[in-house]
Image 1 (cartoon, helix red, strand yellow):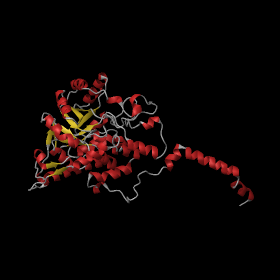
Image 2 (tube, helix red, strand yellow):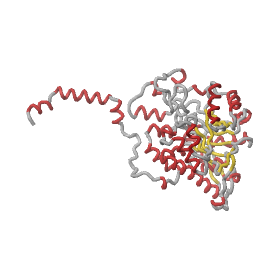
Image 3 (tube, helix red, strand yellow):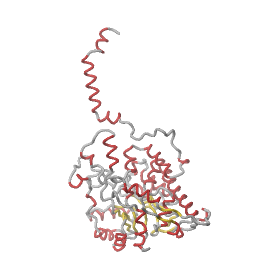
Image 4 (cartoon, one colour):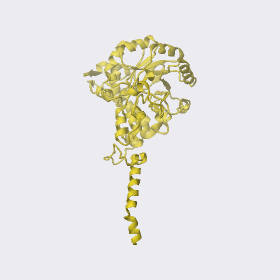
Length: 425
């Protein structure tokens, strides 16, 4: 090496320049992202299972995790606050025992068909509303609807926060059955316009969601701020209300849009966009809905009775999958009380925490007329698209049949409280 080259390499000015460049790169947000290691690497996984190898709904979750950005996974996986309610939803199924029959029957003799508000169903399973499915797979809600329809024409309820225009989803699965989910909008004129749009598309059955008052996903924020760069004030409260579907000042995940500002109760992680709900609004909405109106988010027996008084044709016992309120009860714990209050006057649907056919059996035994799946269906769509959504539903259907057969239940009405034993804590 020539002396002049050696002199250049060892020159203090060059070292200073390199140090400054390194400092500049270290402060760069791009470098922070590039340099951040995977917070949850799948180090022990040697390969991903194929669709044909999927045996339970849980098999789809790691494939889902590997297919999407961490933020998208977190949005589906996490719950409100400390996630006590999220955990309790799952734990509650451990507090209900299935009582096997002395004389089981062959699975081929099990027929769980029923009719729900005029819709014939081969199984009492519904794909519940969940927003933004386009983030899970390019086919989004169209893929989910096609998968549900292929799985014995399973009823699907499309979320108002659909990532694909509802007008494109409706005709995408000929012969399929689709209902619409709706979040109350305080302006009745805007509400009427929304109802007209849905019903002109043939979506005359409306499920109005009345929970999800305020949510803050602490695990998301922990990962976000300790896994890389600390965000600004808007990022700190980004969890408030996320997941409810976009509204004024919100992005598609329900968090405040960049530049929306932090004002009012949002400073304290409370999204007041839905704190105005009232039975008077339900009365007004009932007049706008041409078909059946269902109310989702009931956890209290008195609210169930009031829902009937105010014109509900059905209700869903739901805590939004542990996303609506921290330290609330599991839906399985309150289901028997709600069912008793309704006393057969309207159908009682159920969701939150369902991952197995046995979970479905337990909810049916405690009085539910049908169940809605959320996260499990999202895992299937994100893992394998339409085929994945279909297979998840079919796995749950067959697991339910097996549980019914083991308990000697040949038809849906045979699944009652005598087939389970509860020991809630």
